[in-house]
Length: 451
Image (cartoon, rainbow, N blue to C red; front, top):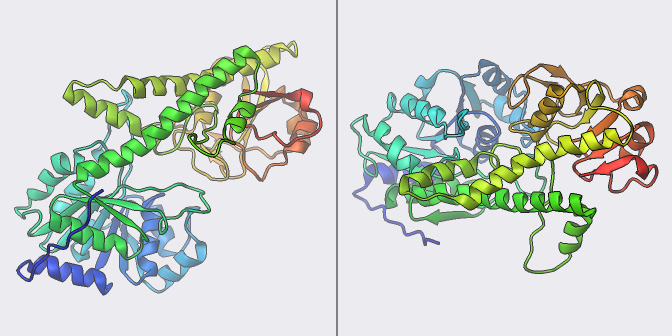
């Protein structure tokens, strides 16, 4: 790990002035993208005294931020309201206001294309918006997850079209987001932040900026090192989840309980970290980030076979759920075709409203294609729009006793803690549990089928 060295001298006037503005909190901070990463970041910067301008193409989001109307679970309603009321945090669709910003942070989506190649078009668009207004003395940082080399190979050339020189006239760094929606223990402030600058001066300024609101900032030697760090973190999780998902498939054939096995293994106080099986992987990182790395690796005639295999296994987990439902219905002398399936939970993890890349959407679509009649209930997700595997609009239904008792199968795809699983199992005819949400249910366990 790199040790930060202060390299700004009296001759580096622009860098010195910007660093001083950051330290005395008079720097204006611009945040491009007011989603799960951008809005919490904007609020954290506003809380310590920075004037913050949020930029987004979505006029509805902009209006909600200006009204102090929170829409992100990791942001406290009262904090956003206070910052908006005082004018510390404002939002706009007018990117000309980037001229007012001393620091600009890019927090836009980086999805995959239909062929599972990196889609950095949102980052490129943000860079093009910046370069039109780029002025001497600005720091530009990227937080969007991407493949190693993006900052210096794609974003830097776009910014240098301004005629300004990096490390002298403006400063550029990559510092990947580490947001975990719904995590009650780790927030933006107390999660360590990796940071890599294009030049040593870029790193020093970016380090100074992030240190104002984040307890531990970790400097690395380059943006590419920071980019790979982020991709590695989530590839590590994807591979380990794939391993336990594969073990789940084996346990199913062996007649063993995967949940019992993993829980027992987790009692070892060293040498193991617990990962749980499930209906697939979801969210803004794990299903996407490994493919950024495999795509970049091909440029070096290197094939990441281990990572690609993990992706295949995690996809297979969703199909295993379908097989499990089919077998469970068969045991009740029922067919999947025309069966009424009540899905509980469509968010990609419990107790949040985020459906990005949720395996539940894929499972529901596969069930629908096989003739099942699908409805769902999720206390956090009132409606599903056609995206991410879902091809139809759906509204969450009320979880009534009638809905439970008339369903041929209740399929738990997200284990929200607010649901009364004892009552659910009591009223249901059949429960297929992909999250071990019914672990503590004492009665009617003969109705429960676990993956």
